[in-house]
Length: 251
Ligand code: NI
Image 1 (cartoon, rainbow, N blue to C red):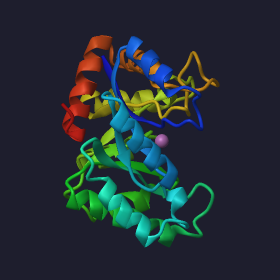
Image 2 (cartoon, helix red, strand yellow; image 1 turned 180 degrees about the vertical axis):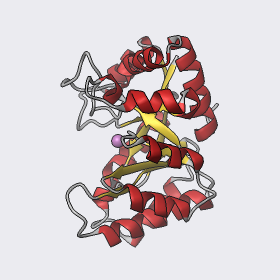
Image 3 (spheres, rainbow, N blue to C red; image 1 turned 90 degrees about the vertical axis):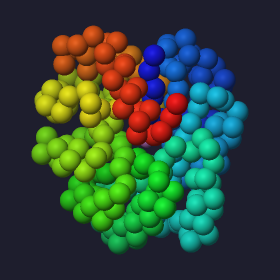
Image 4 (tube, rainbow, N blue to C red; image 1 turned 60 degrees about the horizontal axis):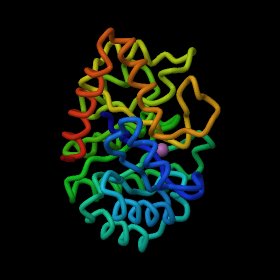
């Protein structure tokens, strides 16, 4: 059994959601946590949470939405996160990959959503791209909030800072790529600090790299982690499920 702690599920990417979920179940994927991070995908995620017992969601505005997210959107988000199947706020954070022109607007949106997470005692799912120092500085303003550093890529030192603040590292398909340096980090931080994720439809693991991703490929990620740590896949499954249930308060 596995849980995909971070993926996107939308008719924009898949023709038939029922069959995607049926394939997941056949591959031993017990639950998935989808992420709605635009106005439209938040509504779509809420719809799937209601329809499917094994689908949970985190919702929150992605930094790429910073310029268009309004006060009214955030008020609506505050109502939406009170839904029983919403298990966290995210993916939220900072993305300076295409420039820092609107960094103040991004930081403002990030802080407001961290405040919501704090108020409702929800974990956060963090998206941080080319923005490590600013991300860490804002997370430090909220010592009562914990969460998942989604699709972690960074140095061992950065990994250790996040872990010391109570965060887990989301590990996905990148770990199966030949040029990935994640193996050193995983070796050092161990299973207790890791969550499994696909970020589907993106970042498909080997041997399907280049094709559309789906939660059913989680076992390829788990196998690679088991190989790195010289433990059984069952151990990876058990420990990462334990981490997931405890962080997102799932049962
Ligand atoms: Ni994502």
